[in-house]
Every structure is written in C-alpha cells, then in structure tokens.
Amino acid sequence: MGVREDLPPGSARLELREGVLLLRPEDAVLDAMVAGWEKQQRGGRRLQQETVDNRKNVVRRFVEFTNEYPWRWSAAHMDEWTAQMVMEQALAESTLRNYQGAIRMFCDYLTSPYYRWAEECEARFGTHPTQIVHEWNTVAHLVDYEGGPGRRPLTREECQALFDYADEQVERAVRLGRKGALTAYRDSTALKLIYGWGLRVTEASKLDRPDWYRNPKAPELGKFGMLNVRWGKRSKGSPPKRRMVASVMPWAVEAVEDYLVNIRPRFGPSEHPAMWLTERGSRLRPREIEERFASYRDALGMDGDLVPHCLRHSYVTHLIEDGADPKFVQEQVGHKFASTTGIYTGVSGDFMNTMLRQHLDRGLATDAKEERP
Image (cartoon, rainbow, N blue to C red; front, side, top):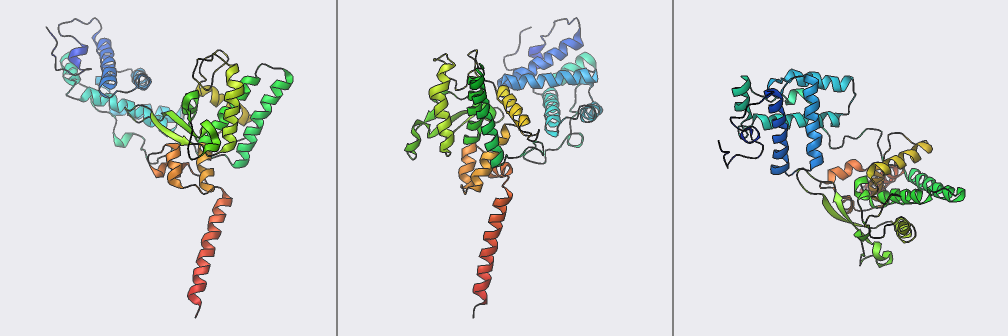
C-alpha cells in the first residue's frame, strides 16, 4: 500500500509501513517513535543535531529506568525517576528540568493526533501513550539565572591575580625551556579576552582572526576596535546570534594584538582562520579553556565554584561600577532583556557604599534647602 503524501515527517504511518510484520513489535515501535521524533525536531523545529541527540539519550535513559515502553508510562514513573535523580545523583534543578522537559516534549509528540502514534499503539498493544509530565510533578522554573550560588563575579583583585598567574606560567615555561610556553601564552590571552569583551567560553573558542574590525570612534585601537561575535547563544530553533562588541579595555587589546602578531603564527597552519589552535593544528575547544582556568583557579586557592563564565559576570559588574550605561552593557553582552544583565551584575561593597553616600548627600542637601527660611 502506498504512503500518503500529506503525512507529516515523523508520523507513525511513515515510520511503520502498513502490512509489514515486525519480529519484535515493542522494540520496533519504540525505535520508530524515537526516529520519528528526531525527524520532527530536525525538520519542523530545525533544531541542532546535538540538541536532538541529547534529548533522545534522555528518552533512552528513561526507558531503561522504567523498564517500560512509552505507551505504558505513567506519572508515577516520572515521580520515581525524579526522586532518584534528586536523592541519588543530586542533579541541579536546571538539569532536572531539562530531563523532564525532554520527556514532556516526547510525550507531546506521541500523544499528538497529528502523528497518529496513539491509534497505532492502540491497534497493536491495546493501550496508548499519555502525557506523564505535569506542572505538579516537575521542577518549576522560578528564576532567570540558575547557576550555583557560589558562582559570582571575580573581584578586580582576583582578576588581576588570575592574569598575573597566567603570565607567570608563560615566563616559567620559557625560563625552564619547556614546550608548553606557546599554549600557556595562548590560554592566558584567551582568558583575558573572555574578560575584556565579556564573552561566553564557546563564543571565544569559535573566534576567527578576521572577526576584528576597526571602530571609527576609536581609531587608537587600530583594527581591534570591534569584535564580531558570530557564535552567540542561540534561542530554540534559531541559528547562533551575532553581535558586534566594542573594545573598551585598551590593555586587553594590546594583549590580543601581541598574541596575534607574535604567537599565533607559530601555531600554524597559516591558512586556518581560528584565533586559538592546539599544537596539533585543530581549533581549541571550550573544555580546554575551562580546564586551564580551573587549574589556575585551584593553584591560587580561589573558590572551586568559579568558572570562566564568571569572567563574563565580572565584565558586566566592572563596567557598571565604572559608570557605563546599563543599556550599553546589555548590548555588549548580547542580552535580550535588561533583567538578565541585572542578574549578572554583582557590584562590590565599595560601589554600593559610594552610591549610598551620593544618595544620602543628595537627600541631606534637599532637606537643608527645605529648612531655609
């Protein structure tokens, strides 16, 4: 029997051809469901393959945990799985919600009449899938930022200590004649760039040498006046967001220029566009930047919760403390909402005291004027 042309990708009738005898029908239907869900996400929602694969893995793990097929799942299974992840694995709230969200979307797909999985299961197994993920048995999303409470902006002193230590590792490698001097110099510059332009680690990792542009308003910075960030954080179903970031820290520009002129050519190959290369000639991965940061952080005895993303928080905080317009900072870091930028801001006690003093002085001056005859 021919397949109808108007069936959507991922529908049961397309994944399970009519009249075909299945040797192991339960496993075959499960595999067809997962394959169809992948097509629905890739085709209709245009999601990245990595995102789709991660969600499929969550579904497979849930199948393994419940030892049941999707048409026999119940809300009790979700309760038990959540309890196991909380009590035994101690997963973060954001991770729990991602896992629960994946199962919710899979159940939405299975129960949609558009894809006809319910009637297919009813015909084959005498039952059908239902939505098992509800508001009352999942983790609520109550705040905009869910990073660990230990993650905070680095103080100016901590930033300086980190960069000084990174530079010392370069000098030490050179002095001892070790081969790691170039990679230490590269990583030192990468950390300074993350702070100096307020980037995410992935954004920094994927920079290319041609991403730098002149800024007519800052001719003294030469060709490093603007940075074109092409791999900004994506929204669901959208490509990476681009933004232009103005260079506001001359010392960071000097560090990047010195690296590109004197160090980057020694990595080769010259035709590779990446700013950061490994000794094998491949692009430096975000994980490698994170590992270098962690080793320096631990060597300095800093809080173990600090990660490279905290340098981005520091960038926002220090610009606000220095009097930068919040709207400018929001555009620099690529936040859609000002509230998100506010969450990233953790002004120092000195800044808070300065603001307090200004407001008190202004209030006292107003009171004095009102008391004059």
